[in-house]
Amino acid sequence: MPLSQDERIVALANDLLQQFDKIYGIHPGFRPAHAKGLLLSGVFRPAAGAADFTRAPHIARESTSVTVRFSDSTGLPLIPDNSPDANPRGMATRFHLAEHVHTDIVAHSTDGFPTRDGKQFLEFLRAAAASGPDSPSPKPIEQFLASHPAALTFVQAPKPFPSSFARQTYFGVTAYAFINVAGKKSFGRYRIVPEQGNEFLSAEQAAGLSPNYHFDEIAERVGKAPVQFKIMVQVAAPDDTNDDATVHWPESRPQRELGALELTKVVPDSLARQQQIIFDPIPRVEGIEPSADPLLEIRAALYLLSGRRRRAAKMEETKR
Ligand code: HEM
Image 1 (tube, rainbow, N blue to C red):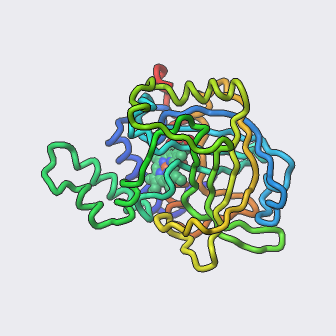
Image 2 (image 1 turned 120 degrees about the horizontal axis):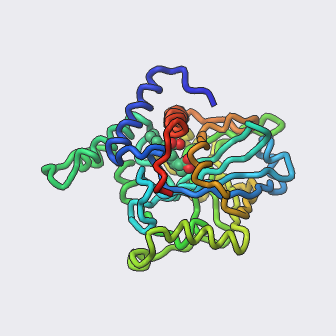
């Protein structure tokens, strides 16, 4: 995974990293966002007919081993799972294609994103950080939301507590181009749908949970039976905007099944492995290409810089 050659992208990635550090503090060895997580392993099997949609290697093979990282939002490694700030949850999936060859899907549990690009996201974070209880009204974040309707929509979107990491849908948010053997290109957005369906808790139910409820629950669940998801792609119509994550496509757009994920165990050395693994929102694989969505390049640069820093850090031992 090479670092972007574009100096402006690298500078923006560093500014974003600093802003996360300012908001959540520095926790050596942990991610500045989605800090609290757990790794599971399992297998991906493609759906019949998925090769008509993409010639990606994991769609052509019978099965591919996967590593999945479930996470809570925020840069706080000890955030209680029942804090409203823990939503949206993250699900990052790595498909292991060969030694040191892989492709990833990075998704979260809200269908959308507050800003169109990284620069606007930095403004959003800065406005939020400057809007403490003592800042006078209208607070910077109120002003930002009033002038950025997509950010307001995202902030106001319901982010309910799932009953389990295994009982909610995760959205890839940005579009990718899927290319089949005949060279036919279709734009689409990932949805990772739980086999058992979505199930959410009320705020009162969530308030009664233990601070590590969701991670304990998923570890216990996978110890009893495989945790299953379907990987779907919502397919764009030819005129749909495919370079702007803040623009939703109509729900009526068809969805194609790419295949099924079956997670079978918690990775034994999960904490150490999380420090090492760096997920990449750019697929870098035959048959799946990035769209022109500006979020992809900035995220790829930022996750790489952040991941290098994390690998170099001595981990704070007490945190999971
Ligand atoms: C400009 C936009 C964004 C910024 C600045 C940003 C920032 C970050 C940062 C700093 C990390 C930690 C990376 C690491 O240390 O490995 C991260 C991880 C993550 N982000 Fe984003 N993010 C953005 C957009 C998104 C979007 C659109 C999604 C959902 C599709 C998303 C979902 C996630 C998830 C699930 C993780 C955890 C990945 C893992 O488990 O390693 N982010 N993000």
